[in-house]
Length: 159
Image (cartoon, rainbow, N blue to C red):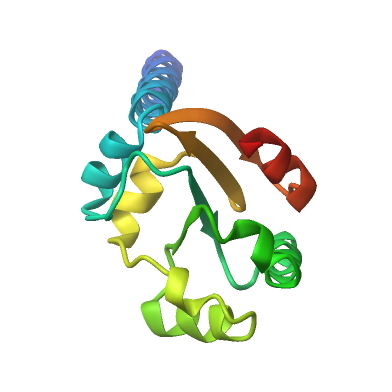
């Protein structure tokens, strides 16, 4: 009886380790695919199913959530400095329902920059949490900020 229990425990441990290894490899693979996709504005927008007017215009793509305090602060800062963003294409995307995202952005007069994307596509394309800011120039990724970023840092990259 003890021998069977020992065999069962060993097989269980081997199974768990195999599953954990497989999961880790899958996550690393997804992360590397994500990093390749976000390198180019066209590949990002194609992957998200977005049709944007000008992929050659300097673009700021922000991934946000209305419950995120850092996102709230960033949107507030963009609103206060919106004249500095006029020559850039600003795209704001969230995985939350459209109505919630738009309600949030309306508080900062930024709803017209909202781009609707499939939440599953967004979360599988961009790995990591919110906020994330991607700055594109000539269609190529120039800078990627993970987490809270000051508006001055964004503008510095674009100047």
